[in-house]
Length: 60
Image (cartoon, rainbow, N blue to C red):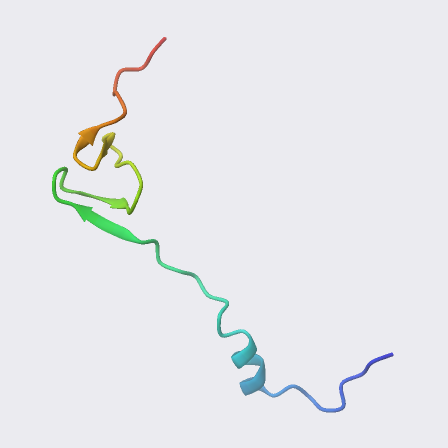
C-alpha cells in the first residue's frame, strides 16, 4: 500500500489548491436599462442588444 514518505507541507498543499476558488460573475452595466446583467444574457427586463426579445405579458 502506498504511504507518503513525508508530510505534505502547507505551502505545497496550498499551491496545489490555488485554482480552487469562487469566481465573481461577469456582470456588466446596461446603459439602456440602467441595471446590471450577465454578459451575453438577456436582462431582467427582457432586453438584449437594445431589442425587446421577451414579452412581459404572461400567456394563460
